[in-house]
Image (cartoon, rainbow, N blue to C red; front, side, top):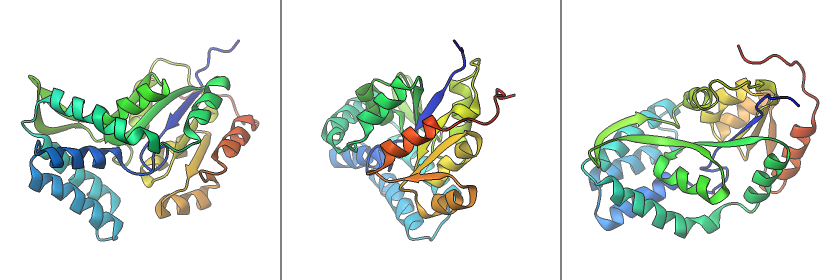
Length: 244
């Protein structure tokens, strides 16, 4: 039996869940008056500017994470942890219907699933716990002595970060990149898609859709993602060299 690790990297926002969990957490913080409201509103404004095409993705990510961290400054960490769990209880029913069957399919096919997504770790961990996935990484905001400092430790949704996170969580493992699967919907997934052998663009945003067409990556919708995944996992794999 091979000891090679077959990893499956799953995005959350826009992929497993039809929205952005980090935004839902931010809105809950604003509703309770727990965060710095002008900075929180700044995050939402930056996201609006990106959707309108006024700023590019790297600019959006840098500004949004910085403002998000500043909005959390001075808040007790346990307050945010508790609110994240409450938000998840309200949002968990919105997971796409294919999600649990997909996680089961990957498990049955011998894949080790890991969630890497751009929303805060406080929310992404809730998703991982829900789905029985042991490894998850979201955005990390600096904590000190039980409070948020206003700084960012990890901008997990910034371009290129998912690839670096993947390397960190699989370090020391015999990973065959051409046998690894990735599911995501945005340009932030593209660097990982370039490296892994089985990328699947889920209802991709325009920038990722263009890349998928150029690179020949498979594309799926919520209606056919399970079948598309089965086809990818069953396809013969070319080459057998581990990553160097």
